[in-house]
Length: 116
Length: 110
Image (cartoon, rainbow over all chains, first blue to last red; front, side, top):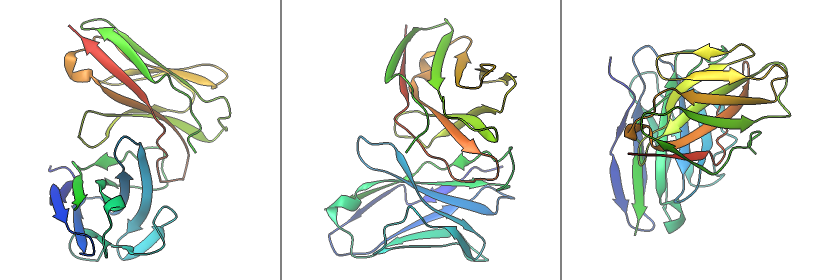
């Protein structure tokens, strides 16, 4: 059973370009979470999605950032007009259930975004 | 903001038990204690969680005090590969997202 997959693992963009980060959850998991880890800082929650629905986007910056989890295919975190402050590691996690005490989240290896 | 307090760093000799403390004095009755770790440059890894009873799995043991205001994660025989940042997280039942604090950097030395 493959774990959470993220691609690309490393992404370099110039200021003003768009970044697209992909996350394929574990088989059987329908809940996806995105977290961001800025250099030398802890992980911060960004957004929680179920298939075709955004459940909680309270940690998402109001502008330039969007996320989706379509019925078919991976979850996508999209950053438009990237700036140097967007340089960070972006981690995706998935879980099988949401409202359960056994809702362990399994994390992917992350995408490291560097904005030049 | 994280609802837990952990020491910023700890050292442990290889083969010895590593005991990582966590204070969560404001924990509510429906909140679970979760432990994750993050090995350098990797994604966080789930370790264990509990509500009020002590828990054990193949990775670690979790000891929660009777008043639930603190807990200890025990790695019974630490190895060099256990060197990582360990996060203690309090999360309500039915709440999905994780709030990470600064964690404890555990350094296991030969």
